[in-house]
Amino acid sequence: MPDRRESLRVLHVEDDPVDRELVAETLRSQGLMCDIVAVDTRDAFADALDSGGLDVILADDRLPTFNGQAALALAVERAPDVPFIFVSGTLGEEIAVERLKAGATDYVVKQRLARLGSAINRALGEAQVRREHARAQEAKLFLEDLIAASPSMIFRIDPREFRITYASPNVDRLLGYNQREIVGVRNFWRTLLHQDDLERAAGHLREALESHTVQIPQEYRFRSADGRYRWFFSLMHVEYSDTGGPMRILWYCIDISDRRTAEQALLESEERTRAILRTANDAFVGADTGGRIVEWNTRAEAMFGWPREEALGRILADTIVPESYREQHRRERELDRGRETLLDLRRDAPPRGDAHAEVALDRRLEVGPVLLVDGHVQVKLAGDAILELRIADAHRGDVQWAPRDQVEDHEHGHRDHEEEPDGPEDASDQIRNQLRPPRPAIS
Image 1 (tube, rainbow, N blue to C red):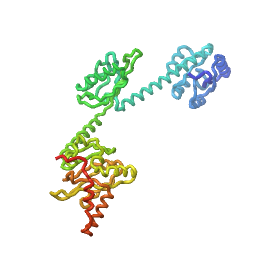
Image 2 (tube, one colour):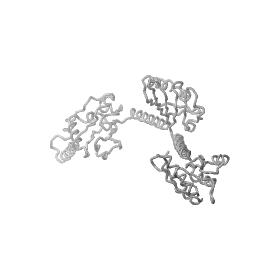
Image 3 (cartoon, one colour):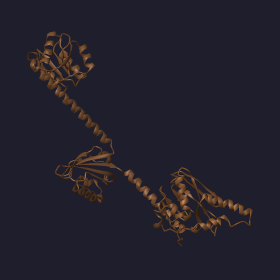
Image 4 (tube, rainbow, N blue to C red):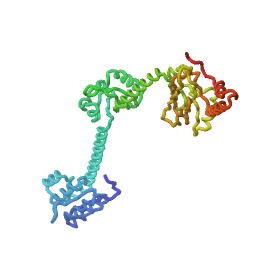
């Protein structure tokens, strides 16, 4: 209802100036502030309707060129929400009833204008109720459409009998059930859940109610109408009374079958990968971004001398970088975090065959190129790169880590040695004497 401190915009269909003034004075005397627009032709009436902003229409039933019946029909067509009240001195009771059936809100005879104010107030109140009801219905329809298109089903459960009192319309699309098959059926949720999930679900709910828990998130398998099962994320929201008892349970369920299928496929793929790595002929070492070992296969045990259970969780550099070079390695990484540090993985050819070394880097983080030069593998590491190391046909005693400058010194020394055969001890021998394996090899 409009605020009485503001003027009502009234459209008055009346050809008699005296009656116009009489109506205006009556409204003022009854405390209604009104902005009255008076018309007496069909065209003027239509223009006023089209201008909008009207609160109420007052109309005489008979005019020389226009009548109330035609005015009502036009108002119903163009301004159906605006209350229409007949104010006439010749309107009989039988005609008044016909006008009300045609869409009029009320009628007041000119001989009893004292009830005009109350008729307007009542009409405005009813119009406000209709508008609020229409908005509520629109919001309800919007919510129902939203739920129907949503992947999430919603149930409301009466905790006294665990009877479902509401089921969202999308239950038909997601599970194939009609709402009538679910609503009002006691313990229908037991029909929905997989038999292997029933006791678990009942236990979760019982524990939550005993501890007055509000949210109960879980994952269960739901049975569709055709007998197939799909995984759903289940969230029960419990509302409690002031005395602590459950008043209402809202149950939200969203289909996660595709996610569960993808997760299962990933687990199976990872298990196959782990099985391959466990039986691989190459050493495999995996490290996380913090440099801690997360994978260490049987071949790595034999090569580096660390049992898997002891190697997992250790810092990779502390495990396979010789102790005499660890501090230098850490210092270079801390001081030159933004600059690539080059380490050399070098191995001597095993006595029984051709020299072969292979290093593979996980490309999820930035790493430098891998170079294989004369049996020496050079690997650039940038930041906390994830390292996967595979070395074929190598033994722990054949594998050493050394900073690049030491390797370069060795290479220069080796060339000098070739030019001067009577020179000092080969630099590789000096490096080899300095490098000591961290643990004894596993035979």
